[in-house]
Image 1 (cartoon, helix red, strand yellow):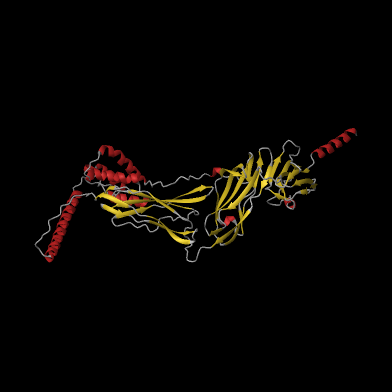
Image 2 (image 1 turned 90 degrees about the vertical axis):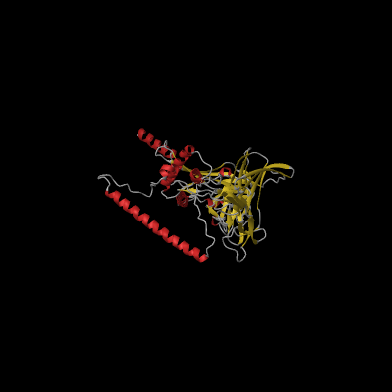
Length: 539
C-alpha cells in the first residue's frame, strides 16, 4: 500500500515537472517613448510551436498595436532531448515602441489553453534636448520631378556618442504606386562630419535612387532607424515621409528617350602609317539614368568614304555613390582606312530630355580627323601597257574588244590542254596509288615552298587568300587585334618593302593558326566593379 502511494506521488510530481507553461517577459518596464522594450513570449515543454506569421498563426500580435509600434517578430524553436518525452520550447521576440507617454499594459496571450500574465509598462515623455546624443534627418533631393528622372531619398543619422548597432527597421516604401513596381536601388552608405548648434556630429547617410514612372502624387515612406548606444540606450528614430509630384514627359517626346543630361568622352585617334591598318576608337557615355537607358549601339555613326567602321555592342557598368547612380556605356569601334589622306570622322550626337529645363536637347562631341600617311601596299605588281595616243575612241574600243577575244581564246586553249594532261596522268597512274583529293582546309600551292608562313595561315583559314580568310573569321567571331596584326606581319614579310625576321615570326604564326582552327571568339567580358559591401543591413 505504501509503495502504491509513493508511486502515485512520484507520477504526479513528474507530470507537474513536465507540464507546459506559457510565459511573457520584457527586458524592462520603464522607458521613454522614443525607446523600445524587448517582449518575449515563450511556450515551454510543448509540442506546439508559436507562430505570429505565416500559416495558421496562434499568436495575435495585433492586440499590441493599440499602444505600441512593433518591430519585426522573430521566432525560435528548440527541441530538448534531455527531457522525458522530447518536448520542445518555442518563443517569439519582438521590439515594442510606446506610441504615447503614460502607463500601458501588455495584455495576456492564450495558446492551447495556457495563459500568460499581463505586464504593466510605464512610458515617460522623450527628453527635450537641444543637443541630443543621436537624431535623424531625412529628405529628397527634389519634390517635383519628371517621369523616369532620378530622385534621391535619404536618411542622415547624426550621433555624438559611440553606437553599438544601427540598422533600418524596414525597407523604403512608396504609395500609391508600390516601390517594387518602379526601378530603384539602395545606394552605398556614406559618412561625414557636420557641426550642428556648435556641436560636432558624425553623420551616416543611407540613400535610395528612385526612377518613378507614373505621373501624379507619390509619397515616399522612409523606414525607422533603430540604434543602440555604447552605454546601452536603445532608440527608435522615425525616418519620416516626403511628398513628390511626378510630371509626365511633354507630348511628342519619345517613350524611350534618355532622361538626364549625358556626358560624352572619346579617345583620341593617332595617325596610321598606311592604309588597311587597324585602330580602335573608344567612346564612353555617362548619364544619371536607369539601367539600359543608354543605347546598345551609337546612333548616326556613319563612316566617311574610304573608311570602314566596325562597332561592337556596348559594355555597360553602373557607378554608385551616396549621391546617386551613374550608368556608363563604352563603345569600341574598329577603324580601317582603305586609302591615304585625312578623313573626318562624324561627330557623336545623343538626343536626351533635359529635366532641368524641361526640353529636348542633343549632347554632342566633335568629330576627329584620322590621318593616314601612306596608301595601300600592292600585293602583286602589274605592268600597265602604254595607251595609244593617236587613235580615236572608236578604234580604242574595237582594239579592246579584239584583245578580250584573243585573251579568252588563249585561256580556253590552255584550259583544254591542262585538262588533257590531267586525264593522261590519271590513266598512267601506277596501280594501287591513291589519288590525292584537295579539301577545303588544304592549300597545295607554291606558297608551301616559297611562302611557308602564309601557307600555314591559309591552311588554318581554309581560304584562297589571307584577306578572305581574315574577313570570314572576323565576321563569325569579331575583331581580334593580335590575329589581325599577325596576318599583316605575314603580308609585310612576303610583299612589303620592310622585311621581317621569318624565324621570329614563325612561333606567332603557329599559335595564331591554332587559335583560328579552335574558333576562339574575342573575350569582351567586363568585370563588375560594384560590390555592395557598405550597405546597411536590413532588419
